[in-house]
Image 1 (cartoon, rainbow, N blue to C red):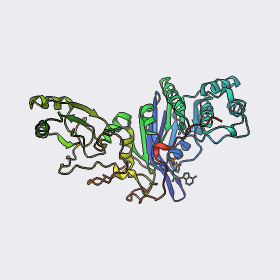
Image 2: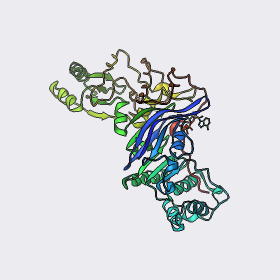
Image 3: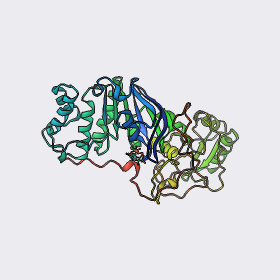
Image 4: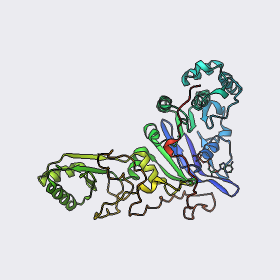
Length: 406
Ligand SMILES: Nc1ncnc2c1ncn2[C@@H]1O[C@H](COP(=O)(O)OP(=O)(O)OP(=O)(O)O)[C@@H](O)[C@H]1O
């Protein structure tokens, strides 16, 4: 297990990580998420003893990395796939690492096979594509057959087949009881790979919970209900019955109703009781990407001046009443981000593209919980969020380039 307690790192005036406390448990893939510059790599470097905390501590199996007996056999990491002597053959690179850690040479050939680089083992790594470099970095992490693995952006540069391979590798390592801690900006991939999430923003803990709970806590689940298009009075009747029963009802652009605050079986019973036929009754749960954007939007350092997240806030249709701000059990949090109503003939739940901001102001990002016994000094982030820098950054989901097989 990895355990951080009150971890803080300052570089001069810059606080990269502040009072971070979390545990990464064995037997699960734990995703490590946060916007650019939020302190993920700094945290990983401190876990691996490559940087000293300014205050607080982080241990692996109860020991700081540098005090771990035979650390390379216990902990494997991919931090920067480019940190390789490019003039060396891939196999020689791994062989050097193995010799330094007392790992037998046959293990080098094993891991080359595991990552699929056996055919290019005698090629110099400076000729490797981004994806091949990532595979070599993963091979190095696996070399000591460690119980604890850290991967910083392991799918960066991998093609879809490579991404699938990494996903299955992470899951199987965790299924073997290992501790797997992995950072990524690819939310769709994290949703498929991780069991648990640790989310940071501006160096502080924003969330530490299962993927399922994270999505549920940071998005509004809702039901779509559709009555026969030919009978508008049925829609009105149902809308009245649902509202009377405590639901919040919004019209969708395609004529359906978006209902929050009532579970699906109750909606079905109310429709039956009102003698209204249904053409559709479907649940919608937000994606991890939607929930993540919702949670971190107050903790982003770098944002394009043309930010599509201005469209993430749901726009209320004319005349519709805003839902009350009380969370409803099992229904997410009303008023939090939910996808916009579908466009006519379009993908019902596609992400919005550059829509105008809705009439509701986006709620501020949840305050980071203050860790008891904090030793990190005054909170440098107590001020309101800085205005976004105008620097355009690549979209989070665009960070993977296709692997070029050279
Ligand atoms: N050696 C250093 N000296 C000064 N500042 C640093 C140093 N290393 C990191 N920082 C700063 O600390 C902050 C956190 O950086 P870090 O690389 O840990 O973020 P990250 O979450 O890994 O970002 P990304 O997702 O872009 O990789 C950034 O503002 C960064 O500029």
